[in-house]
Image (tube, rainbow, N blue to C red; front, side):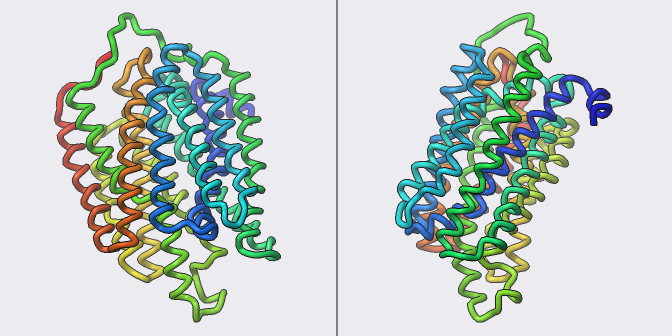
Amino acid sequence: MRRFLRNLSPAMVFILLFSIVSLLSDMTHEGAASIRGVYLLLLGASAASIGFISGLGELVGYSLRFLFGRFADKTKRYWLLTIVGYAVDVLAVPVLALVGEHGWLFAAGLIIVERVGKAIKKPAKNTLVSFAASQEGVGKSFALEEMLDQIGAFLGPVLLYVVMLFKTEGTTFQIYSFCFAVLLVPAVATMAMLFFTKRKFPHPERFEPEPTTYAPFHLDRKFLLYLAGISLFAFGFIDYSLIIMHVSRTFASVSSGLSETTSLVNSGTIPLLYAGAMLIDAAAAMIFGLLYDKKGLRVLMVSTALSAPFAVFIFGFQSVGALLIGVAMWGIGMGAQQSILKAAVASIVPKSSRASGYGIFECVFGVFWFLGSWLLGALYDWSIPAMIAVSVGAQLAAILLYLLSYKSPAGIHG
């Protein structure tokens, strides 16, 4: 292992270490995400409430990134913001184990606290990684981080699946509460690895040379079109909490007459469904991230076209086969967007303003994620076909804006 690390550049070692931090972090909050929708349902939340909570959490988490991105650029305290953000993010998850049987409002508050932690850390963390990525290729670097990140997102649900296999005593609520308590282990490991990475690389900004000139950060047509496109994508991309709530409702009723061994989708296998989506997410992140270095925004159009119809398969049929296809398409969308999103901002925003660039981008993204989650959750209770139409239509419309952005000659200038 040491020989392998010695053959890597310091910048790549830093990216790998931070990717392991992301892996452990995603074990924590993506493990929670795999059962959170069902947990909120057990606590008494409605579909509209779950959609609102998910969307509000994303709104808070993304909109605050603008403020923390600006703060990071002004203070250059990237490590401090990253550490504080990670602590709030991962430690809020196991506290969900303390929620009472009818405490969905308390659970909702903790979900929002977790998103605040992400808001604190994300611009600073992405900026730290971008410094090293400037040496190794932004597409490849962020794809590698996203791949390991999603391996963690796979391992977290698998961990909870194993816990559910052995934790058979108690009510469903008690078993789910215990699962959240178990997630304290990867949460603590996340913080330990983060402090190790900081000790080894206290000044990652030295990986990227300082610019010779400085100009104020501003947006132009190319980036505004890109923002509009990714906002439509966020608006139409259904949150997994709503998906898993639908799965638990639909397949519980469809398979009610089947034995536990003949039903492929049940309360015990629900975490594995999310784990599979995260594996596909990881593979898509690596593939599309590498392609981004060669093809740019054209890759975003392809990935969006591949993933856009996922709602048709998940919500339009009561078939396990269609469900698996839909979840796979959802995973492709998540993986491609996550790796390309970070790589694009690192490519077009200068070093001196990069945290602000990440903050602006993610703030706009979060506003539309919130609006979409709220509307799609409400439409689920009113008309599932209408919800499917809005979801697919918004994502397909995003492709046109990506095309216009790609053809626009100018970028962001710093």
